[in-house]
Length: 294
Ligand code: FEC
Image 1 (cartoon, rainbow, N blue to C red):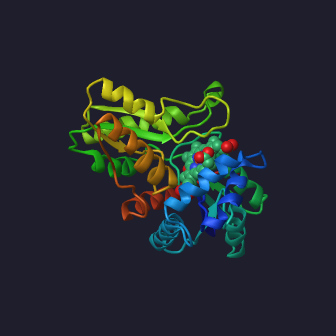
Image 2: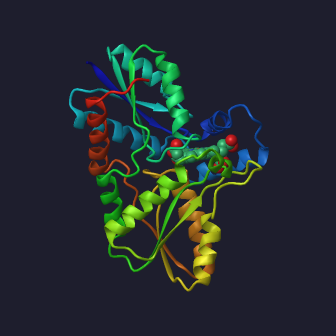
């Protein structure tokens, strides 16, 4: 067997000029209100991605470290909404002679509106030319849980676990996303011995339909009214310094907390931490021992 990994990320614009095309890709051809486009460009501008993206550099660092860790298995990055595309990564894996491709997403929780989309893109690109060993979720990997637990252990603050919201209609089809998020949160809290914790969603989009809640901004109001003084946010649904972390939490949620008189901090994201890379390598080795049919 000759294997390769397609390591998939949501994707982030490489420079400010890319933002409109990136947003159009996310919307998949559906119209974008001009004010929403302007707002997104402005958020990326304020994060300082004029000429290069620190987030894409983190993804590359993670890819290179995973490849080193795996030794003789090449790893190619494929982005869901930017370049290099998942299809580019699949072609590169086939070019080096892979007959088994491991599909691994840099997001731990499964949803039909998230991970299933990555899988579809990879399956379409491979088109049966290699066996696909796809990792559906890794939200309960104990070394991932330990890594997060270390970052909240010993805090006196109320810990708020968060993840990207999704349209609430996913619950009607038995989607496991919310349950997996609560499971990760529960595991991290119990491993760290944290008793004061709760969960909220963040980063919902304005798409004109209800999204899963509570949203963190409303949740902070609720916590303050319950007498909580300090909050530590642990975004279990993300592993890197995305726009959702550096803008939605570090600016929007932090401003809201300040307005409410709440102390506010967030954990450092795993990014390319060698322990996270160890978790990813473990997943690849495990799935290759028993490859699944695509
Ligand atoms: O540059 C960066 O660091 C940001 C990358 C980024 C990540 C991310 C993660 C998730 N999203 C999920 C679902 C949706 C749905 C919509 C949606 C919209 C956006 C927009 C941007 C964006 N997302 Fe994202 N998401 C990231 C970036 N996301 C930019 C558009 C502007 C906005 O609405 O704020 C709504 C699409 C639509 O309008 O039809 C749905 C989910 C995740 C977590 C799983 C994953 O990482 O794949 C779920 C990172």
